[in-house]
Image (tube, rainbow, N blue to C red; front, top):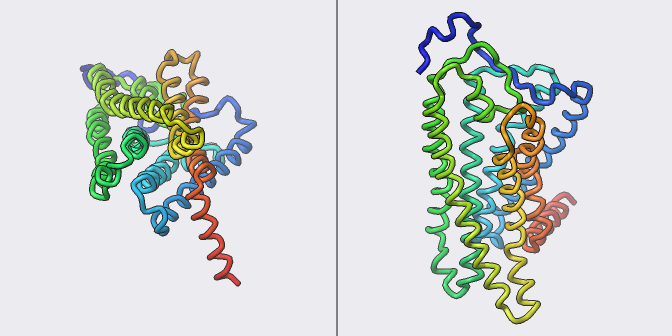
Length: 317
């Protein structure tokens, strides 16, 4: 490890500067309004789904229980990134303390891994419902549903905690500019003036353990789901079976599609803007469109929402 004297001839860093969209300063007000609308839409959409799942007897099923967990996760997820971005765009203050940056990185990593597990659990739930409908009630009971949801949150906790503990001992001096709109791991780690090889290797191993098994489970579940649907003789039966998982399949495609693109893009300053653009999809846009996809493509959610609105209108009269 590089000794502490490595920073003696350079200015110590106590805060980072998140460059964000610094090259487009004339558009910052427009960006602020754009992301403010996205944040408000995200909050309203996800909180509405949480309220419907908790309050409606019609949505007391494992599928909607997992959907409520996903919406809860995405509420925290958006609040980890967007409020800080909005303040920066409005005030022009792009600084963030090292502690604040590490905290943001911690919650971001934790929630991304949690989403991977929740999406896998939801795909497994759809697999049981479509491929083993006669045994679904026994296999996916309330106790097992709670265990799967709790396991999704807990499984993401330990790996990111190990990474953050190791990062707390890193030294930062010299350059303090993060070429991104939030504190992501590659951008922060490259600014460290300590030996980061161990942390980077552990990050690859632990993130692989947290991302690839859920991804493989999701792919496997949908392989069997699609194979089962194709064997249904009637067109009506196929449409009905596919309608129960089409919303989740769209969410999985958007999330993993953009995540994989960001992962395989070559690293370097030349691709910095591309990383920002594709990162916007899975960090900002996905939490907004998920509740819209589930509400617009799910008849039970739409009917529950209509009943809730009608009750509210009647009470207001």
